Image (cartoon, rainbow, N blue to C red; front, side):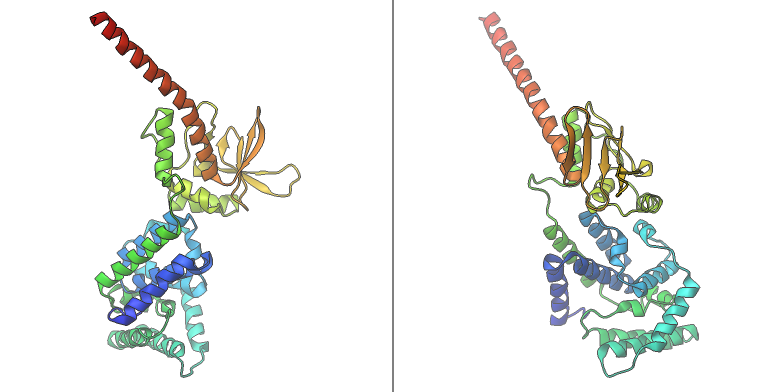
Length: 357
């Protein structure tokens, strides 16, 4: 956690290496720990930017960043004392603050005290809580400073232990745990760059927004994409439907909340219009994502099943594959029209030359 010298470089390099090479679960844990560390050090701008970019890049729910009850508790306590709460916080489950503070106190009380760095951190976190709850601000700040000193030499220190109660969270929001803003922003930027390297654009080189823009351009209605869905609306929809929406579909919704119809392509529903439909054998329930209901999303796999009255049933790997297929059909349809237009332009030019001659 060190913010100066070789230790800080090793710390950042290890996190970046994890984001580039580890399994998704470990990547999410690393990003979540980094964001929480930045938030606890009162560098909330860098923390929020990291979470937003992670969500935009992966399409996954913010709940993936909250690896356990202690982490969820820390975020809730920090948000309880912050003046402004980021919109992505709406995806986190609500918690009873009083009950969570009791649970935090019990966890610290049960912690074993051995000569190991993580146990020293637990003891210092408990001291910070005790001093803060007793109104001893100087004592609490001293405990936080001591925690930071030990944490500098500890791989992945559990910063959630510090922020598990409102009195300490309030001190953290006031800058009790310090990190140089330049280092904090560079740390966030390094992880964001690693996320983009891990999740590059598709083979055609287009991002989600570029894909949607190209589809609308080919349709002849550029710049008409609906605005993105909000985190609140998406969280409410998942709660109402009782399923977690697949990553690819979440990325689509965070790019545009639905899509207008075009000739033979149905209207893609907004997140607030999504409904569930049980399969004929009642083995699973799919999410209806279009009007008319010719496109359904398999929430377990992310596949999109297309029911075409003329060509029958086809399955697309995900909603991205569906939209790429739609784009290719538009290109094929627009190509001949452009060729005809070019031929007419050439013919008109030749006619003009003949007339002049």
